[in-house]
Amino acid sequence: MAQGLRAYLDNSATTKVAEEVLQAMWPYFSERWGNPSSAHSLGRDAAEAIEKARAQAAAMIQSEPREIVFTSGGTEGINAVFHSALSTQPGKNHIVMTAVEHHAALRCAQSLERRGIAITHISVNADGRLDLDQLADAIQPHTALVSVMTANNETGVLFPVAEVGAICAARGVPFHTDAVQAAGKLPLNVAQTGVTFLTISAHKFHGPKGAGAIFIRRFSKFEPYICGGGQEMGRRSGTEDVPAIVGLGAATVLAEQGHGEMNGRVRKLRDDLERQILSTIEGVSVNGDQELRLPNITNIAFDGVDSRALLPMLDRDGIFASTGAACAAGAMQPSHVLVAMGRSIVQARSCLRFSLSHFNTDEDIALLLDVLPKAVRKLRQHCAAQA
Ligand code: PLP
Image 1 (cartoon, rainbow, N blue to C red):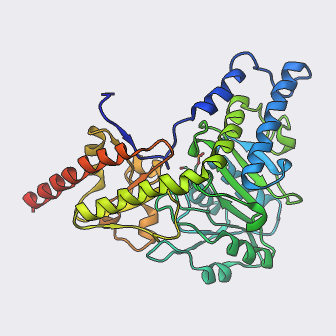
Image 2 (tube, rainbow, N blue to C red):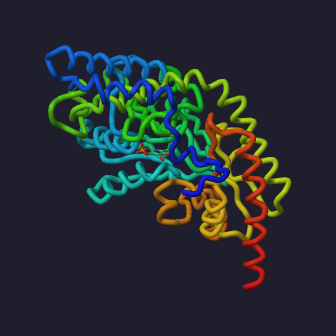
Image 3 (cartoon, rainbow, N blue to C red):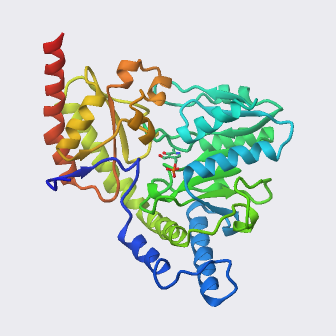
């Protein structure tokens, strides 16, 4: 790849692994390679490293360490929760979720639907906000699970997790929140939100890919999705990926330390980026509630522009952005989130997501503002010439 100026503004897809995380992981690839189940000191060393990471992950969400189960990431965590909720509650065959969940949840639900499970999708308004009355009305005596993400991965819009938790508690229904995007951007507190299950993924907050965790509230029923050697207290089998788990733990510590900067410097950088795009390019608007959203994401509509053409132009000039969810971007499908917010297919295709991290600087924003207006102008001229 050419190494000119570059700006990585796709941190909701994945983040760079932090140096401190790499340093923490490295010994578990080299001199500390034991299997945590082995009954010798090298094995015990690895098992201790996992318990340290469990305590670190628990501290990030204010849970007890024994309520944390390590997984291979967000997708596995979500699938495990959905399957467990159904298998531990025979006779309950209904799931309530929002229409804007990540594909990891939506497609898991789709496959359950093919096996006879009823799914209710709760809609959102034009700002991406949830209708809580609709959610409460959707819960039935046979509802096995309510799943509502903490923050949307395309717009950053936050959902009222504590309110949903209260509704679910009153109705005696387990509640799962996908906190994959929120972790590392906001303080999370499972004691305050009343969630039964919560999922996180390390690669979204400067940890390694392929490492995640599920919070399972103490005394909640849970049936393992992956069975075998009984690791993770029988809740997730398979020899543990010790370096990845250690990396997750180290990343949670950094995330906690970084909340101030995330909500200060990074938020200001996002707000500057947004303000300057809105003031220098005509026919642009921001998608989603602008108050209740993550500090690092903006999703912007460029009237008359096809993001499928804009994205590669930015890429050629060193700007890495996205149209939304990584898998949807690969397939170039219009965003189901923006369509659920009432945008037409053409409008949904005119949007780009810029997502920031601690590694972004004023120089990244300056590069974007140098490149983006020219690219948008060029595409609009091209469209006008073809009309
Ligand atoms: N949930 C949300 C909100 C996400 O943004 C993602 C990844 O983009 C996932 C789940 C899936 O997580 P993972 O990539 O760890 O499987």
